[in-house]
Image (tube, rainbow, N blue to C red; front, side, top):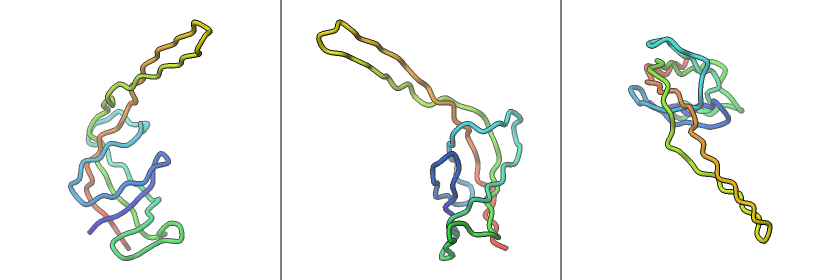
Length: 101
């Protein structure tokens, strides 16, 4: 059984016991359940755009940082260089269950 759901403007294809990294969620406690209701597809059931009776239950494990990306802005002939780094904060989730009522 698999599901495709949406969070943070991105879509994720998951199965039970998968570990996924999603954009930062407002959670701090370990072992807290997160329920996603914007489910687009479960097996062969396709929503228009979402399935009203489906949900993906996940367990929040911890917050992690993605690897660093470097942004360089350069204006030729103006002696202007700017270098900036960014590390996105992600939430590590364990998919517990996919429910289709």
